[in-house]
Length: 253
Image (cartoon, rainbow, N blue to C red; front, top):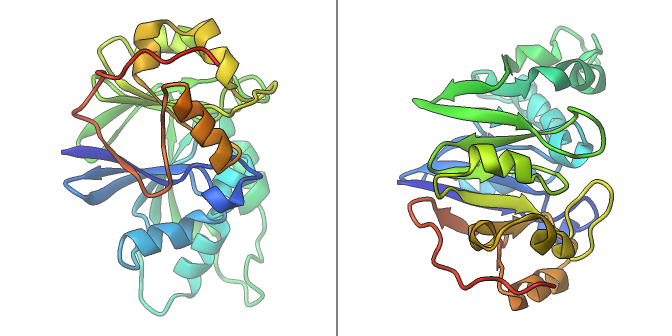
């Protein structure tokens, strides 16, 4: 049984909701963490009995999605118990920037002797990658700059948008088999993020029935989107990926 578990659902300003991040679980055990903002390592350890993630996929380089990699580095490099490097799946287009942000410093510790990449097993990915016996799709989304952000999909199971404006062309290609679609959405959109009004404008009723919204700005915004008929994720909530559709058609905002 596969489940997608939200560690946090908030945008960069909604720290009370936690950094937007999910864990793909198999029979309750963590398989793959998606994004690692500053609040994510603590949320992960709390959820999974003190463990650190064994594998992470990063959607893009904004600090509310990668800021937790630095404390994770220190925990691995300076921990009392030996820990294997964390498998880090990165879309090839974002590797150079992430290296400049986090990896391009020979003195990550005052004592020296440890490279950032000693603590992570870098796996560059293109359109697909294998992990834990599953083949994931990777696709560019519309966020901030051209090919600066990516989403993740598992055919016939789920699509996770990452931070994005509406992406009907992506759903038309990667979410045509009843996949549950976990989608960036706030009450008010902006040039980098989807807003509630955008959903009815860009997506069909059938697509909207499969949406689960996250990356919103406040509890109040989440309640408003629920009142419009949408499923809206809460921090800590898990979604059984065997259940799709069946929701009442959401109303326009």
